[in-house]
Amino acid sequence: MTELDWSKLTFSYTKTNTILISHFDGSKWSEVESNSDDYIRLSAFAGALHYSIECFEGLKAFRGKDGKVRLFRPEENAKRLQRSAKYLGIEAPSTEMFIQMCERSVRENIEFLPPYGSRASLYLRPTLIGSNPQLGVQSSKESTFILLCSPVGAYTGGVLEAIDVVIARNYDRAAPNGTGAFKVGGNYGASLASLNKAHELGFKAVLYLDPATKKYIDEFNSSNFFAIKGNTYITPLSTTILPSITNMSLEVAAADLGMEVERRPVPVEELPTFDEVGECGTAVVITPVHKLVDKPSLESEEETVYTYGDGLCGEKSLQLFNYITDIQYGVREDKFGWTREVEI
Ligand code: PLP
Ligand code: COI
Image 1 (cartoon, rainbow, N blue to C red):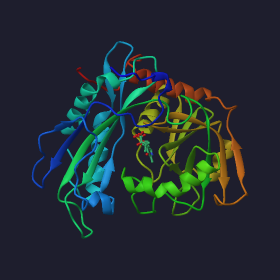
Image 2 (cartoon, rainbow, N blue to C red; image 1 turned 90 degrees about the vertical axis):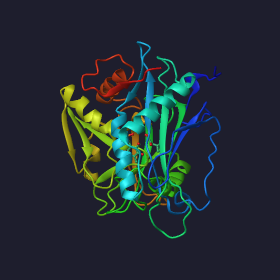
Image 3 (cartoon, rainbow, N blue to C red; image 1 turned 135 degrees about the horizontal axis):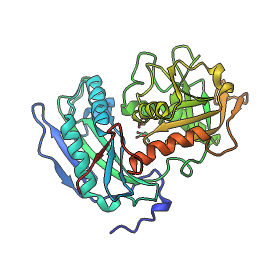
């Protein structure tokens, strides 16, 4: 048994029982191996290490009020990984293989699944890398699919704790016709200079504008952007942001709660008109934004500050948070069939 204090979990690495690995040799996937060691043997010439031939997913397993274990929309993660792999030109696992490995990872690491009521979960990190030795810049013929997991709590601060964020106008996370809409590791490497600077300034996240015109809100470094205006849920339409599975679900949830839903370009000038602003995503769930600071450059003293709420989660954001998490923890009827029960 683990000695973990579930209430103290953050979004960080915990060694679990096993990681699962399968290798595609150019024609077929190998039988899945389960290793207790989470170090992998890899050619130092692997394309993943030189040319960022890597993509990944993030999804969570939840222990429900009824004791059942559920994954949230894993087939959507499988499809998104397949899209990312196609972009990189590497082989991806089928949806069936992806889900089977997620379920097996949960089973083999079940004592790391936080109990109901802890507000924590078991985060799964399916990772796909180009793995054959290579020197030239080209898509890898062989790939390796690895299923990692770690128990996690809130991504920043505490659950539903509001954060301060900054718009970094002199940085982009993705190029106008680049990789923004794909979950490739390179996007996260590209965000680090601005994220590190933002952290030094006391901000928890960076909000990027559309890289082509810098007129519209795009997304945060590790989550999508949403805002509430009156009874309307607003979220950016952009070709340079990751299609978030949480956001897609929140749009449905908002409509089901009687709200209007708008997915459209969101001009920066609209920021002062919002009642609530937040981040959404698997890791952050819904994290309310308190202060949003717009700086011409992260190195400049100049800034425009927008403030939302009083540091607590806004009413509509809280309704949406409860709607989604109640489905994940088996408290609310899953009328859209979003969850998948894992036989333990
Ligand atoms: N945007 C970025 C850049 C992310 O890293 C994530 C996290 O996965 C999201 C959005 C949210 O996506 P999802 O809700 O599918 O986790
Ligand atoms: C997730 O929410 O699953 C993510 O992948 C964000 C992450 C990069 C921390």
